[in-house]
Image (cartoon, rainbow, N blue to C red; front, side, top):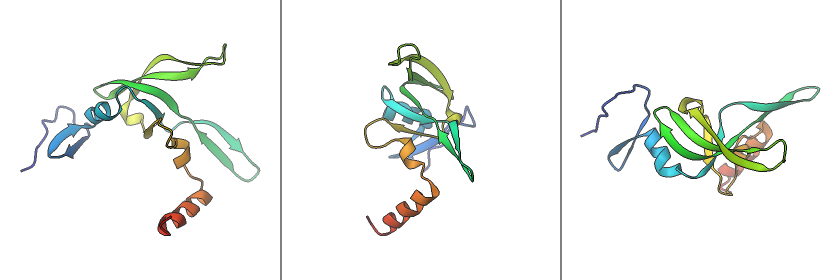
Length: 133
């Protein structure tokens, strides 16, 4: 027998784990509350232009997940203070869940920048994976 959610919001995302039906927002809180995350929302900070082509540079948001309210995620974000050139926090932002394209925990096991591969790097990675390395 399948659990059917009482749909209050038709845009909610659900997952099933061990027969329990959970909302995506619940999963975020369970797995990432109070952890520092790197978030990519699809923006580029700059584009490096060459004669024949250009390379967009993705930008990331770094912050500690505070809470999830309906479709919004609350982060305490980190930023570089332009006056003192030091890392600061305590900059609360609300990001619409639908804006987040990718995110990962900041844990020393790589960053989002590591997974956005160039075409040439993607070919090498594909070959290594297929070779079992």
